[in-house]
Image (cartoon, rainbow, N blue to C red; front, top):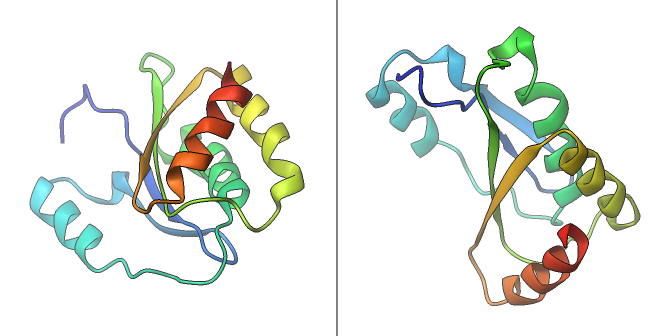
Length: 124
């Protein structure tokens, strides 16, 4: 894997955020692709706050490959409106913003339009 890429782990969110793997566990693209292909949809709630918190604390961590010389960029794949730990989302987003972690959002349902509008207001 290229040293120019700064990606560390693959958390998933459902009722609780879970960590599938750290990308430092893989040394080639094929192994990483196989690991991604066996991740299963968790169902349940949309715990965006939990997923973001896990990303911030576990993924962007020097113990798991975080490098101070590379920008921190996260890709958030979501199915819509957060439904768990909603009251903590604004604080988590602000903490992430203050740490200069950039989030790229990818929506996979129609509900995402509402989430994007809300997020743009938060990050404004």
